[in-house]
Image 1 (cartoon, one colour):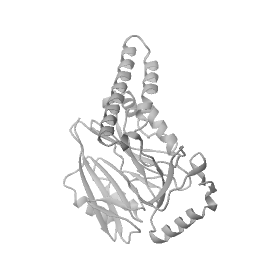
Image 2 (cartoon, one colour):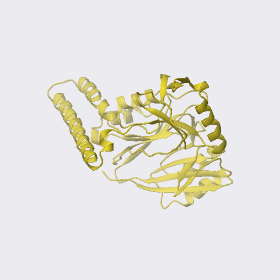
Image 3 (cartoon, rainbow, N blue to C red):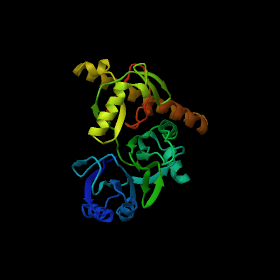
Image 4 (cartoon, one colour):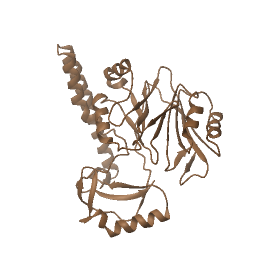
Length: 331
C-alpha cells in the first residue's frame, strides 16, 4: 500500500463564497478527497462551492480556532475563514464519504458494509472522522466508538470533536451533529496523538464522579469549589477561548526509564503485534477446518476487539480513573 499526498490550505475574507473560491484557486491539482473546516456564519455557501472540488468532500464548522495552510488561527474571527486538506489518493485506493447519527453506524450501502466487514486485517478501511453533538442533544461518544470497534475491529479510527457548532457536511448536504467522515481503503494510515491544549491553573483530584460527570474535586462539590470557580472566572476573562478539562496521566516505568525503557516499550509493542497475528491466523485455520463462517466471524471479533481498543480518538469524554488528576487548558 502507498501513502497519501496532502496539501494544506487556508483562506480568509469578508465573504464565505470568496473564501471557498480562494481555497479552490490554491489547489495544485484536483484531489481525490477534500476535508475542510471553517469558522464562518455561512457554512452552507462554503459547502456548495467546494462540493465539486473533489469526488469526496467532507467538512464542518469550528468556533474554537483553526490550523492549516502553515498557520494557526485562534479567537473570534472578524472575517470568514476556512482551512482545507486536499488529499491525492494512490492508484487503487478508494475513499467513501459517510455520515452517522450519534447512536447509529455510518450510513453506507449494504454492499459497501459487506466489503468493509469481510476485509482481512491488512485491507480493512481506515476512518477519518469529525464529530459534533446535535444542537438539542448530547453525543454519547464512548458507545459510538465501541460499536465501531465491534463491527470494524481492525480499522484505525482517527478524528476529533468540533466545538461551537453542530453543522457537518458530506458534499453539499448539511447534517445536524453526529459524525461525518471518510473511509479509506488501499492506503497505509498510522494514528498519532497530538496535544492541542495549553494547561492553565492547578490540578485537582477527582473524589466523586458518576459516569462521565465529575461531582467532587478534592472532596468539595464542584459547584462549591472556590479554587475552581476562581480559575474559571479568571481564565474566561483573560483568554476568551474554549476551556476544556483533561486528565493528567502519571508516567509509568517505561516512560520514566529513558532509553532502556523506550527499547522495552518497543519490544512489548512487537510482542502485542505478534499475538494479534497469531490470533488472526488461528481464526483463519479454524474456519478452514470445518468451523462455520458465522462462528469464525464472532471469534474474530471477540479476539480482536482488545487489540483495536487503543486505537481511539484522542478527544473523548471526561472519565474517572484511580490516581488520575484533571487539569484545565485552552484549545
